[in-house]
Length: 447
Image (cartoon, rainbow, N blue to C red; front, side):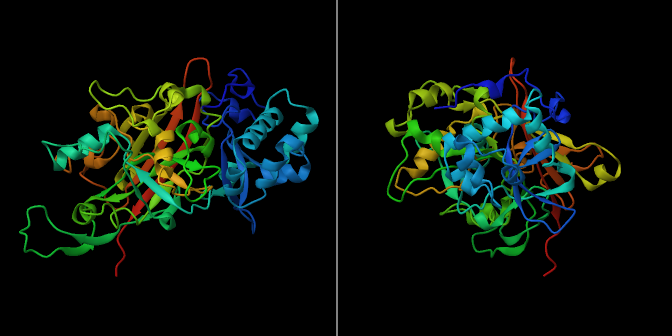
């Protein structure tokens, strides 16, 4: 069940951190996402913080100051004395909500003067820090939850039968590579691998070399909070109690490597070379005003099987989250041209909800652990402007994208930078954002 609305969502509440009150800020006091940062100005350790405007509130310092000593928040506050969010994720929803409410009280404009003065000593400018991966991710699973993406890609390879028979019954996913998850801003090395041209003869050998079809995937990730024991399941009605919050995910993909290797066992080296994450994790509590009904299935589609069906999840398991992907080429950067928006989509168009993905993942007794990352798969919509990867947008390279410099892109070139952004907005509530997730392409290794 989604979190209830409370005083932390009131749109008229402002913060004494003035940058949080700017209308276009991703991080007003109604958001308060968690992340992990390291100061640039000294030999420093990774710390847990909360974003507020263009600042970060150092929670380790807040704890030492005695600002988070109340019994209701002590457990979550103690968990923040770490270099990753895993301990905070593990304490579960109750302590996390109590900590959020306490931080909101400290940061609001009418906070007690003593709280305000003490907290001000532990604010750090976001410009002065390095943002790290928010959690130590033990396992990473990527789903395929957009029916529009699945249909568009299916048409490229199976025009007469784009969706396989299982798609409308089961949240399709694969186990990704947690070791190659990287923080936003990390440069992405063009991978090498085996490829074979689609018009090659069956007897032709594949070639090994740099991918010629490097792509992005605009995705949303969500982190597991409290996990489940091996052999136990997570009922659909309890699934959201096991979700901490969301971030942006770019599941970089080498489409030519993927096309050659994916049958019969699915994605492998075409995706395991890098996956970028945004640094701030927006909690499920902050997202409460923007929940919506689950995707309305077309007439004739099967209903979810009983273990994947919950009344509450159908009524409010969706999320009204706008997503955007932009490209900045080397020539655009040198000419001072702003990044070109390639696509805008909305997470409410996902065929499967977060709760359904998590419940299905654990339905065979698979033990999910705090800090595990589950990603949605490419978020695409019905319109061409809402396609979340170049494979879809360019019809596998047949319809190149034209850049403002006159350049064309079938797939990504060296030096290209991809920037993902996301935000929620609704009348009566403050707009909140996920920040950004970016990465630029480096040439393949000379070896």
